[in-house]
Length: 218
Image 1 (cartoon, helix red, strand yellow):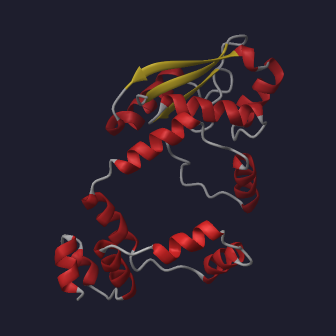
Image 2 (image 1 turned 60 degrees about the vertical axis):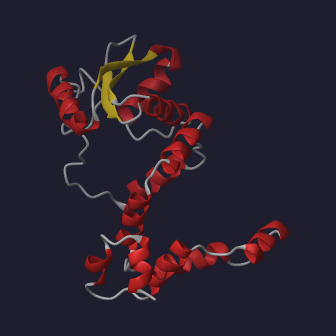
């Protein structure tokens, strides 16, 4: 699905919400799910949806555009339509894609987390994400891996991971797969890099091929 600018229009009052998305179809489905389940972060849009019902709202594509101009184009539509005016639209923020540097309270973070509980991607979105992952080049994968090396993990995060896995019983199938697993040369190199990372090493190795890395860490 294409990226672009969309509008969620209230057919009864004429008020609307302007937004942008890399995937317009997925964004609308996300809005729809949040509204149906009374979990939408925009209180004005949620209140209107509860009052008038789903039949009163229409999703419209205003303009298709490339990702590199997505926010600029959205800003143009926000400015032109005046959708941040409560008498005109439902938008809360006058700057596209920006919370204006405000910090969310713990209560706001909790509400945001609660809204997304139970949300599941539809089969089309899952298939699309898998396709994107499978199309990533080895260079791309290597850069992601290198970017995560040396990243500190807090004690709180370690505890959460430990608590989540504690008491988990592996199935016979998982145990059998682990016994048969033979790590590839690339995996061995990644493990070596993770455990032997030192100051300045990331700069030296970030442009190396896997064969060069294997020679660097014999």
